[in-house]
Image (cartoon, rainbow, N blue to C red; front, side):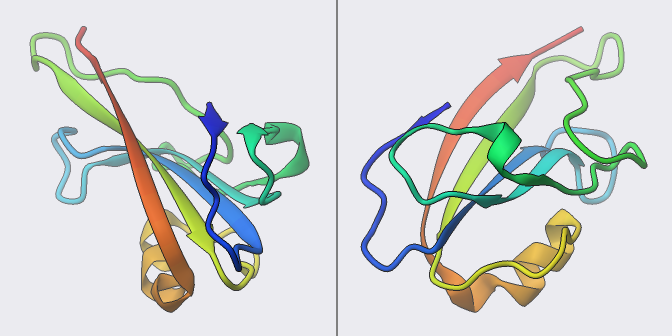
Amino acid sequence: MVVTGIPEGTVELVLICHDPDAPLPAGFTHWTLYGIPAVEGEIDVTAARSGPNDDGGVGYVGPFPPAGHGDHRYYFWVYALGAPVDGEPTRSGFLHHSADAVIEQARLTGTYSA
């Protein structure tokens, strides 16, 4: 993923991949990535900290909608933050604790079905 137009004052980028169509109350988070350098160009995942996914692990977990469940949307959110994120929170923890630090956000949407 390539990012451009990073707003002034950004100290860190965050990437979250979330499936809102998963048959769970809050959808399914496939990836949380923190501490991405605020540099335009391709995101260097090796320079960032992977956080928890909703599969009980850390790092990226690919799409796997239930068979016959239809198309699922996969939102890749990029957040530009004016303050760094402490640690590697869950998606909901990040949204709750870092909302005031968000300068700007962008979303890329992909779809997949099994």
